[in-house]
Length: 253
Image 1 (cartoon, rainbow, N blue to C red):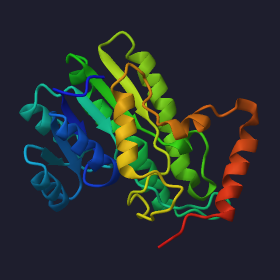
Image 2 (image 1 turned 30 degrees about the vertical axis):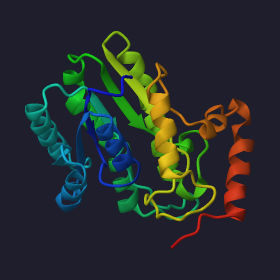
Image 3 (image 1 turned 135 degrees about the horizontal axis):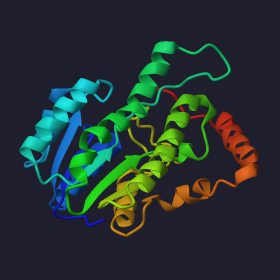
């Protein structure tokens, strides 16, 4: 995709990967509109990045998504890039009793959120030159983390949904790109400084290098072995990965 002279809308743009991507697009000279649930946070990010704009949006609320899309498109009819980034990552227990409210919230945010946002913008994107739809999945789409089984499942679903979108949009001008972050040191769970986590600035730098190509996936190199999950042998890979996490767990604040 071209990295300049776009009008970019991104969900979950007040922290972590979302904010870092928004600020990098902004530095490159794009018009960026971020979204999130809390206006105070949106105002803080836009104040730090003069020229960036924002809209309040709750991806779990279909009416909120539709209203935000109408507002954005009325102000920015040249919008040509939509980034589905908003997500949450609670822990869960697939081997025990699940918190139903947490499970519903997770699916509503991570899976139905991108579905709603895409639905609200897709007909507009089809009419735009250089239109791009970017979906943020995860390395856990390919190798699930057992302690976050539902989160991993939502990201696997986003990967699958992206494959279908790309096929269905093949004869339109909309390019569908997937990014699949590794463990990045952000506040998605909490910022840890763990050596296994990829520094945010390094992730953004490499991701934008990949976005600037014609590839349909902008996946950093450290994720590629997981992306090449070996089919029928995946259980061995998944078990080895999760055993390593049991032996060296993510520290919890």
